[in-house]
Length: 76
Image (cartoon, rainbow, N blue to C red; front, side, top):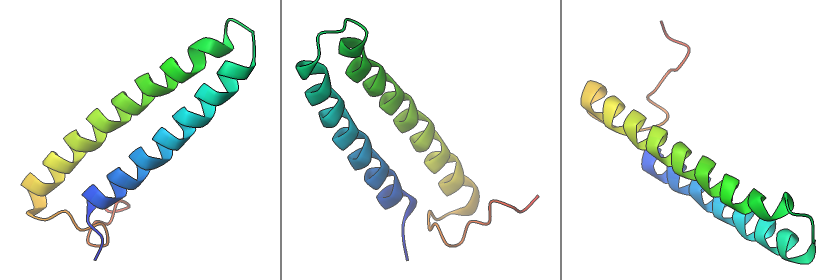
């Protein structure tokens, strides 16, 4: 069974690899707008983390567990 926390950590790992790639690209270019791109990516990663943790707390309080496969998001 896959926990929601493991899925959130996987997403954070992907965001950090994108941040490293964006930083390397920004260091090789001399355009001023490209240098801001890694900072914007970090802001989006922080927002994603906050929303993900809020959903994790809400789901674990409502259902009592955080297994991904038990959640049916299409359910009304």
